Image 1 (spheres, rainbow, N blue to C red):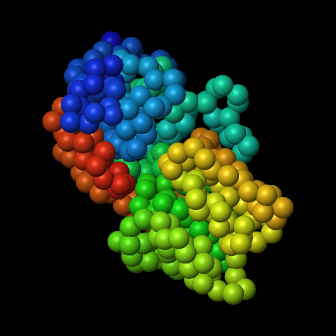
Image 2 (tube, helix red, strand yellow; image 1 turned 90 degrees about the horizontal axis):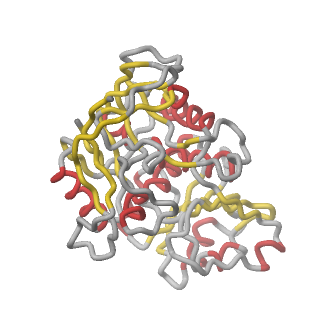
Length: 347
């Protein structure tokens, strides 16, 4: 057996000041099975939390299983390669997708999972044991906390932007809900490829930050004239080729007048809740609505290579030093009250 310290998901609501939380986290030492010959063993340097963990703690995520470590994002040093081609001692990232090798359309039915819920390992642990095929070298330009923040949101953004939305240099692309992890990566990836990016947010501060990071313009989606203002930003004869959307909601009513015929909406989430209406104007204009969730192992490797080539650095909002109960509690509480990107727990 291998002993390791980890943040374990429990069925006890340990966050008393967060009444919507149905589950909790307990940082403790656990024993895991000995690694198989194909398993890689990774000494985790940092793991990251994101809003997926909040949905799990609120009991709103599918197929929740208690008793295992949470987390799908991590960077660490490879102690045993297993069936990986990466050398021992290399700093590595781990693909957060499970059972999705390379199919561009999607994984096999009922096979796909994400790290951080049993029966799969979670990354909020000192020692991570995982199939060596899921391990790739970490770009050297990334700090420890930046590297930990990359895997899940980076992969989701890469697939939504390039695979599903088919965005290319010169395209006009709208990214909704700027400030969230996936949206920020999509912005960084698009700007690196000379794609013209426009954004939406309910925060003028976040729109201003997006402009500093290379967006051409942005609108407040709560403004009743948001669609009109976005059209003014685009200009009379310019239209959106694609929309990267993680919200759904009322902005869908404006898209038909903003998109080219045959444009693509790549939707990776629906944070606004139910009620999205794919209107007749959209399908009459040949607009494609394409669902996008995470990505394959092949796409993960492509994403990491892209980040390395363009020297992209994830935007990290806060770092906690040490995998302790106090730090995990504080990080979850902070994350639940802030619409910001990743938190990393550094060893």
